[in-house]
Length: 387
Image (tube, rainbow, N blue to C red; front, side, top):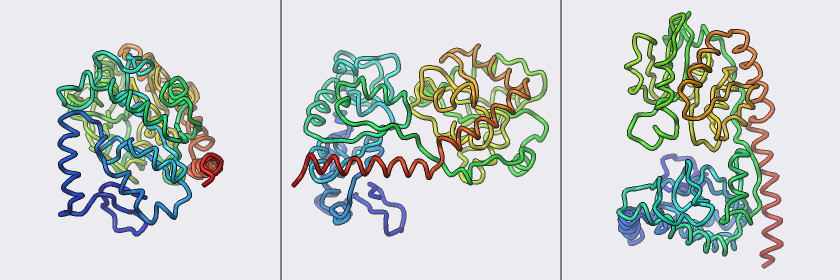
């Protein structure tokens, strides 16, 4: 694994960032400042060039790219050269690769025709942010035209967008849903899980990931409509909210709900939280997969999601949960109330959700599917680059 900022001492994890002080380190810092101010969206990144000089790169059979757009460290300008040297597999996690700049395009379909005009959902704080996506779209078109890529997506929703994309539709694309450890994420006793987390043993518990307002995530994770929905619900019996990550926006719902703001949970605590909950709500209005929904299914907890995202297919609604129209607080409130009240339906969906996880989202299956695609990518590269 090659990463920009190496924090592990494990020998198989390699850091790409230049050491301080060095000419390359100085260049990277200067380039990043220009990148941010001008909205260059990582074009100045030197990670790809550094990667191609490493001995482990030359020993490799295939290069699998993941999130290369999270930081200005990897420039797409390096893709043509890298793809001539090695087979390149690239997992498309969001819409960035097929748009000018945005991670999520919402209602905008300018990515189909070049992102011309004023961008309604710009990224960053550059003074050019509303108009520079068109330039980035043209750059991507030119760069991709000289690259040879093998694409992976985790959902049919993303697959269909890739096939519509004028930028990416010429590349082979494989649907490979992400996998999780089904021995770790497995149904546990609700009472024991609640006891370990200090939760009310007899109340119905609604779990979700909370996002602080003011961020892009607050919008596309659907927090506004979830809060409105919870305001609308008339609880027949006391109920609790179990909030993961940030619950500050929901503290006002007390005493109507007992609010447990647990911060970010992982490992055993996350499995306990998902097992303790009666239902998990993921009201995203933009979502290319939804790993926490899969983790909830694996723990036997039904999930409520919104139309227009990858989530209905991920939970195989109505097998693993309910689907509601996006940005519809009334429909979301009705779905939450229904699962709180209908015990048999909730239990059946929880059992079916576990079966879905076993059928589609086991980690060994994920690995096998990737290995098969690697073989195809290697064979294709040998045909196209025989030298």
